[in-house]
Length: 406
Image (cartoon, rainbow, N blue to C red; front, top):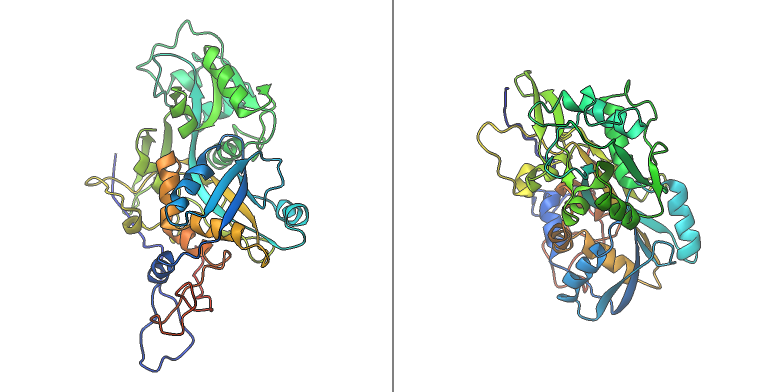
């Protein structure tokens, strides 16, 4: 199997239209972002954040880190249905969702959506002793559509010759009855990798599954039902000591040689690499930044920066990561009369906020996406050295343009 590391820097230099008197060259956006990082404008008060089912505790983790910098700024997680001015959703919000959020929660003020973090997704199952089964896209498609109902099915057994799959109960597929970002990410992968086997397209629900009201119910049922299977974020499976499937990645290296490898669930670095296998897109509102699921495991040029990710690859290790990651987003009210929600959102996309999410078990944004998120959230960055006329935040009032991920 041919292996070679390929890396493309995801951040390019900003073209500055202004002619500086001293002919100072333009500063790259990572430097500009670093300058913004050092400036935090605290807003006293408690900001409520409605949190998607399955990610309870993640925003509290960000709030705990924020309190070390802004002790008078606190975060309270509430239910997804509560009318909080900040919402964490587990997938890409639609234009209608953002518009409705503005109407229902922002009192007419605009709402902004940006990516919050990535999260790797896999097939979790309750079969003691069978940790690390390889699940091909065709096998996963059969399981999720209800046509593969036995672990002895050739689609599963053929990829796992070293496992004894005889005598197991029939497969029981479980799912939450409402749309789930993890399922959306998995079906995005299936649509790309096995369109003939998976014909349902991208969807957040699985009609062939036994339906449960919420993810907590799903995990509870998964824990007590032998041979049950579900699509879950990896951190949820880890927290509940569930077995997880490894997934294959096929591609072509820098020399044009095809490779076919299996990516395991036990390497956090590979989640970061895989999170770059997508492209950020502007929202229909002209302000939001949206990132669809990352699938395929091979980063898109411009969407991933190996150096800033602090990933160390082995000799001849290809730049290949986990092939299925969902992207959670935050939707936030942008109201001049209430800067607290925007202040929290700004902190979340800073390095410190992303670091607290990584500690929680989630995958931080690739640096190109994180830098782009500063602009919708109005984190101002300066192209000049700070001067005596700087604002209280230490940066200028003008936004520097950030290149797109394309």
